[in-house]
Length: 381
Figure 1: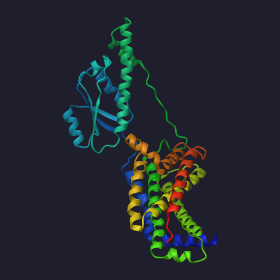
Figure 2: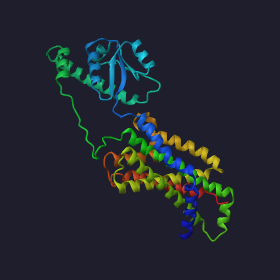
Figure 3: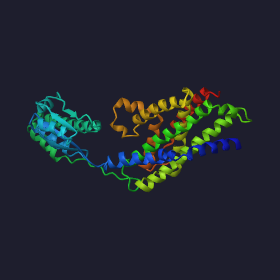
Figure 4: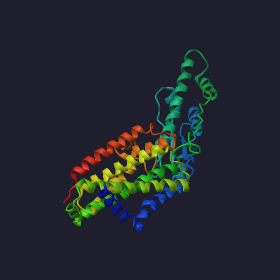
């Protein structure tokens, strides 16, 4: 054990003695969190500006417009199509909702004419807006169907019945309360703090595990093997140093984001276990990449591609809900996704270790698979 600690301490000093290491470990995550989470993210309560073009001009199309206006997500304005395009061009609107001609007739006949939604090229929240539009359409279909059924039973005209159903029905309201004081949801700053902490921990781990390749290229590893030190002890010293570096980085980022941004990370035991298994998964992945390539340059190139792409897919840069369905499916196969779900459970819902046991188990499986493949492929000469 003494030899393992000696190698671990040597590696720690080599990394922590460099001033640029602190910029990468602490400065960059905080700057990225501030920019993407704070300055660009706003308060997280702003509505999406949408333009509506009513080509039908009917009772139902007007009712549809009023229904969308009730949404907490969308701020909608009725304009002409030319005005809508101009708003998109001037960045004053993120999309255009077009109610087609014969919209009312199609709903009454049970042959729904789909509402069109055109969004600007730089708008990433289209999925959420589509859900609001589909919900309003489905609600209208049900109300019109009920009104038509009553009309066929000899009641008044469906228009009058629909007006009664639509205006008299009490809207369902939901009051949201947070388990953790001051946190209603995983807001932009909190989500990005967790996401960028994971991202830069992965980048630092790639840089740290690159020392294995470097020492092998310089012949240092070969000389270490010539001493009375076993391979397992050498690897143990390196892996322990990587783990401690990861915890120094993540623990410091947790403290700094709490002080600077007021982020409460939740249950301490849950955080310790979640971060620990996450670090093991990240170290395992870094070792796996180091076992595939031959030089530190190759590892850096391949590692950056793997880290950046998987972090994008797993929702570290933005909420995963805005991604296409296929990307959300792929996200289940990368460890960062399960780490973010664990952080969400702890931070937002006030969860405990028991609540994140499933996420911890999946991360442990990732770590085990990466370590098995990486350590069996690693070369000692």
